[in-house]
Length: 249
Image 1 (tube, one colour):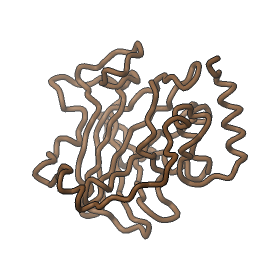
Image 2: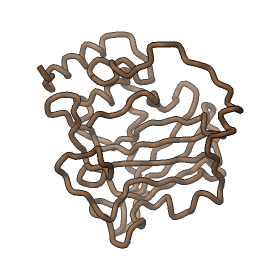
Image 3: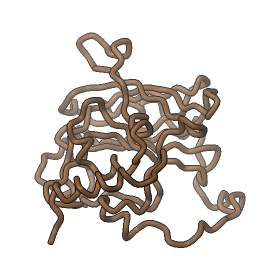
Image 4: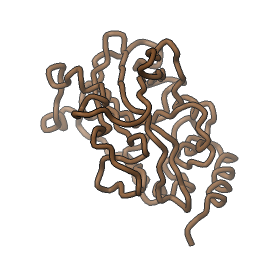
């Protein structure tokens, strides 16, 4: 029998009583697919220099400035609330990390991805693809203009809905140094019901994934603004996903 939201809530509450940490649990029972997908063997060390012989490379000539604006990628204007998301990529000592490739992907304002596997009955937006990228500046800053994504259903349990979020991917100096995480919006009522968000059992660590509304980033009569820093190391490190965990739609 498929689990109900009440079942998931009880499991979330039980998991919260167990010892946890600032990073997501990779075998978090309320997040059903993590039980099947999480690694069961020790990590296998590889030679990063050998990997770089066949992995793709990038540079400033490969990433155009307009790729950071997800609202101008088509002939028309996408539907929904126009927003700006900005912040800095920092190391554990608060120093800016420059020249990092930051990629984002997200659902549209109706909560639907532009992907053939996303078949839930929300409309596609022909003027919104939902992907962008840029390189951080000398002070570690990134800045994307986009549309605020909508929540969407997924198949973890009956009546499961994901809070609105934007996926972030940060590359280091090479393609073997990829970190993936999600940014959420303040005040979302779906937070306590979502097992992906709740898989970070440390409440203070969960809060690090929530952007803050910033009126100084907001543009009059154009877009609202949010600020969210990404910390790569240290005690205030941004919670990151395992590359084995994916959402099930």
